[in-house]
Length: 306
Image 1 (tube, rainbow, N blue to C red):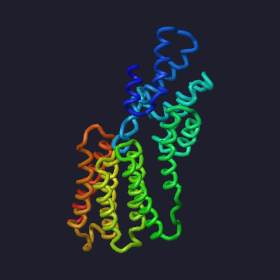
Image 2: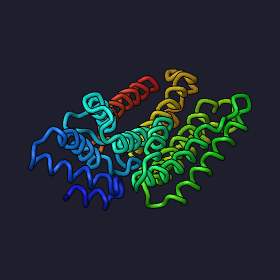
Image 3: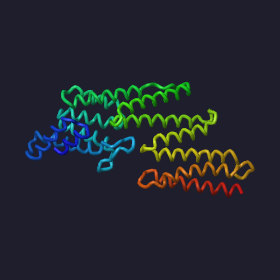
Image 4: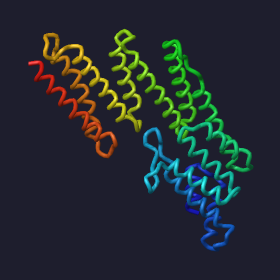
């Protein structure tokens, strides 16, 4: 019953899970075969619910005790459950699958499973209907085509998608779909920076536009789990400009200006160092390697330019 109460508090499986929990408790008290499937499913759902409540915009998808992505692990466990117990608790199985798929941003499959649940009577079916409304709005934004011919139309299309995601964020503020919408908005913001970076030599002040884009991306998504990745990418851009300057101006010649090179190198090092100083993140080792590489290149340029 403790699990049933926690389920209602989290708003995942309002009434159906309470019944499943009761069946699971009964399975422990009276080990009859008809209770065993519910007990198996209760464990799957309980583990999923415990690990799936994080804000996935701010935190990465959690891992199960074996180190596997909990969403993928849950889907595999549910598939195994269905093979062993076909037709048992189909509404709860579909609902749990839908939740896992939406957290993996596979909205097509999530919608399909929510539609299956919506056919059932009761509160779980009603909950699925509400979630369907949100995900169908997601799909309309995701599936809206972008121009493949006009770069200005492409950027405009990305901006329109950002505006649409902002509307979703406002509508579902405080709910799980706010976090999903922030993830989608962030994806578009990163795509805009990548597009400018790829086309910077075709744009007036292209390098400055890229710098502005990264700065805005990092400021806007300071709470994102991807922040350290963006800092490394920004540092890589400065490192790329340093190397391009080195290729365009022979370090042993008269056109090479060490101060100009140092400006790019120091900007890269500052961003790499910000990441390297954070403990417990996967990007730390990568940042440390990039620092050593940039320091080595800088020392080489100083020696060659004398």
